[in-house]
Image 1 (cartoon, rainbow, N blue to C red):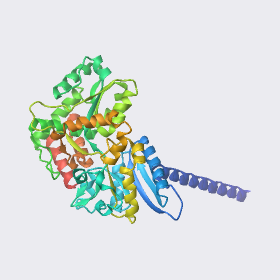
Image 2 (image 1 turned 90 degrees about the vertical axis):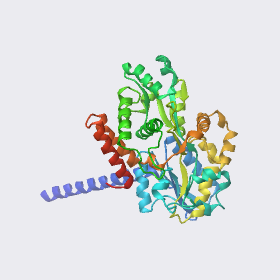
Image 3 (image 1 turned 45 degrees about the vertical axis):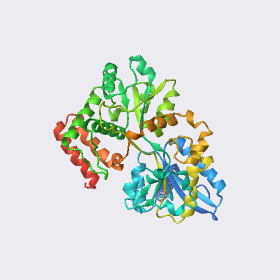
Image 4 (image 1 turned 180 degrees about the horizontal axis):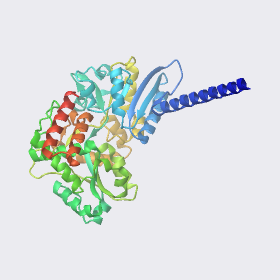
Length: 434
């Protein structure tokens, strides 16, 4: 009887282990499906991979576009990775350093400096001109993707910041659309008694907003053209004081408390966002029934610098390690220039740069889109906008600023001590020192 009982227990344990192992395998496979998709099992096709980040809408139309590409190019199979922005940059760093990146990659403009300072980090697209219609891009547009004489990437659209406000909220408080920094501060005073904020934004947008105010006030740039910090402790003290004032006086919602739902519900009157995010912050708010208005950049009268910048929204590049450059080039050309892909993408990433894409969308009502209207506003201010220095978007630098600034924001350090420590931390982030 004891032997029989031991055998039953042993059998039960074995069954539990088998079931647990099966569940683990299923979960692992399910996780893999989230970000990595194989579109065909045919063995007679050349297989390449592509990757991108974005929201569910972008994932949907991009996957539809890949299906169309495959129908047009039956000899090329395209597998893909995709995900939300959060965490995507860190995964890209792992892929790039381990040489496991995809053949065709959506990249951020700042990644050119990070992964290809000598021009060898990505494939030279000039060598693939037989497969990519480069005539759809001006020399200036191509220059954004040039590193050391090599065309590393092509811009999908151009981007800058824009401001959208809920006009219904402004009307409730008797406020006009702000034009100056003083306007913003006065709006905060009006909304503070109700616990509401004028603006909400991410930490990157907050950093760039403060940079703009500093540059307008001091009449000099915060970064040198090679990405080094030229701001001193006095300037950093100035930024920290203004940052705290923005939060204390309800001009800007604390980053930790900002949720898009608060903007959509009217708890936050406005948002600073990229033009390429217009569908979220303008169209999305309008869909709730709110009246939405776009505002120009806040300015300081008499300033020598605008403090605002322009950059490629996102770019397409090809891996320097690809073993299928021709097939990758055909896919990249399709993503940028093909009418079928352009119609699927519309202006979700901003107004396209490609002249072929613009021609296609002009027949689809391009001029009626809010992205187009915001881009026209950008073009009106183009003379006062500088090309963004990649380190302005460097996550390590922005994190160093945010962590350092919190010591003053939450009253853990004096502003002078915090300015000194924050500046040191940002310089270490630039140099790569830990």
